[in-house]
Length: 110
Length: 112
Image (tube, rainbow over all chains, first blue to last red; front, side, top):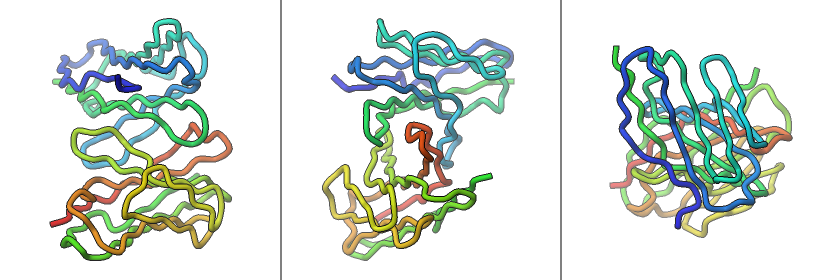
């Protein structure tokens, strides 16, 4: 079983929709949870990070962590065509390495 | 503000040729530096990280090596490239919060 699982999509939504992106993980010792956005042929951009279970909000983005279910989510409200990208979840156990999901491709259509 | 640079942006190299990719960070001191590879259909894989000048830790055994000759400079090298070395190479930096990693624009390497 892979440590971090993420549905590759593609996920296609109309502009203005609420988007839900999800990752599951197998190792309950993961401590920090990150979401990155990666545009085509560019480096990943850190959107948000969380440590504890619960919600964290930043503008149109909300990150949610459920440690009991080993499940994290990123919600995007009022989605825009500029949100079209691949979204990567990442988690840290200890040390310096981050464990990444393979990413979910999102397309927001006007 | 901090800025991270990588070059070249794209590179096409024949099998067996050497490799040198460079990464520099501006606007911060004593960063942690990382090299990742993103292969098609696979997630990002940490190759090397460095917590200081001359200090390199390898995460994956392979024909690649890394060096940190200056505080804000990180170099990825190979003496002889393999076809399997093709991929998107990303440099990243972090401060004291090492889970908060910021990536550069990447180098797309194709080995032919």
